[in-house]
Image 1: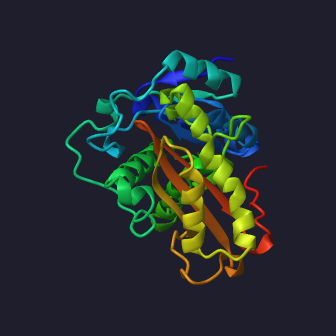
Image 2: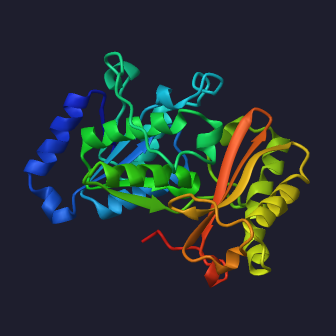
Amino acid sequence: MKPTTVRTIAELRQKIAAFRRSGADERVNGVGFVPTMGYLHEGHASLLRRSARENGLTVLSIFVNPIQFGPNEDLDKYPRDEEKDIALAASCGVDLVFLPTVQEMYPQKRVTTVTVAEVTEGLCGASRPGHFDGVATVVAKLLNIVQPDRAYFGLKDAQQVAVVTRMAQDLNIPTEVVPCPTVREPDGLALSSRNVYLSAEERKQALSLSHSLAKAPEWIAEGATARELSALLKREIGRYPLADIEYAEALSYPDLLPPDENTPLRSIDGLLLIALAVRFGSTRLIDNRLLNPKEAGVEPCFDK
């Protein structure tokens, strides 16, 4: 069944309110929400299907948010395909697709920005100044507009999940932020809307990210420290001539703090995020692995 498309905040709120008034949310467990920038792929589809399973109403937003792009980033050429996105949404059981314009989301000069400190200072936050202010601001707006019971985010961008989770906690936003596993191509490449930018050879060499992450548990078990693990990851990825490494780091999760550089990672309590950002030509890819170093690299289960 084709979802209903909505382009204004007022109409979206009316339709969600009608669902709430019907009492259906009490019978079928509320409203689920998946915020995206469109050009949907199987990673997005996995979030949408989970929301449809767990909620009586699923809302998808498609909005390429200009305030999270830097001046030299790919806002203008970010891929878009509204018709294809709506078709995929229909196949996943989405009820409402919210397709606002920039004018609808930012109708006047914006003088309010949501900033989440500390967890935004490293990784992508260090190399993309202002990016997570843009993410936190638009997600806060969307959560206030939709007021969902649950919002679903993919762990491919684990820093984003940490930022949104902390923001919701600190601002007492009554939405459960649900982290969901990264979805990969059969050969291991993490799904991303930006993968379409890769040439055939860049696509082949981009597998260096997942290949190096697959070796990380072995290196941790052998006693690698955070500094040593970073060096091993960079050496492995550096074997591919088209790879331009931005970062390769191991941090505690979800606070994203660096471990003591002299302490073997296998002795650390809690979750460890091994995060990568690498450019292939003009395309910047991120990938990560989240694991428990004391449990032989066992990854936590976030799916249901």
